[in-house]
Length: 226
Image (cartoon, rainbow, N blue to C red; front, top):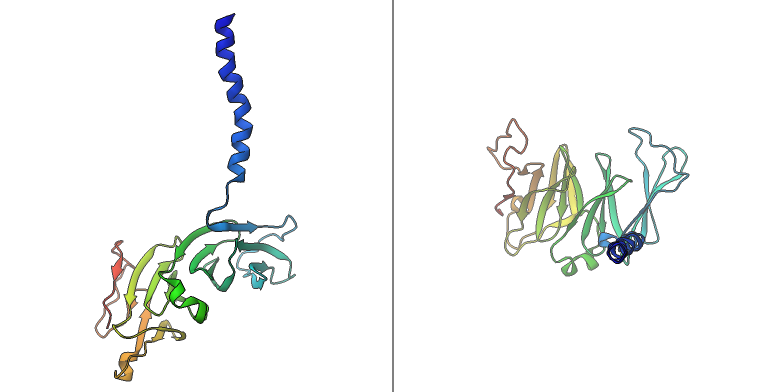
């Protein structure tokens, strides 16, 4: 009888601990302070129907383009969204702490942090920072560098640093056909050196040949400043 009691005591303790462990798991703070909510009354998803994005307070909201009904709401604790764009079914958002996120309205699929955002983001804001490059690629333009990420998984594909003594101007970047042209003002430099042409593979230079297979080398590429 004593042996049975000694065996039952740990088993009962384990059974009592399981609900407590479940509650503790649910009470854990979401990574990066994410709060993505989908209303029960959210309309059914329609293929190729791009939701309308709207910033409401400190949250980003997606609304049905036909009815205006709320599809989902995404917020981060203590943060606010600066700018967002659609990219291959995802919504890419830049936040005021320099974090870039991607959500499909069901989950937040990836997070990427910009280097030293406090040096420029508070004064600049998010104008022009997020730029689609085509072929499922996203450019994040900051004064010190341009980085390209694969939208599907947030994988960093290449980085182009600004020239010494120069800085990129995200708000002055423009798209021309499939090319992103970014201003890079440099003192005493020819105007041609102050414009940088980019696409999903990186900097466009004379004589560059586009490979038949996109991004055949899975390793990250550090583009040389020019």
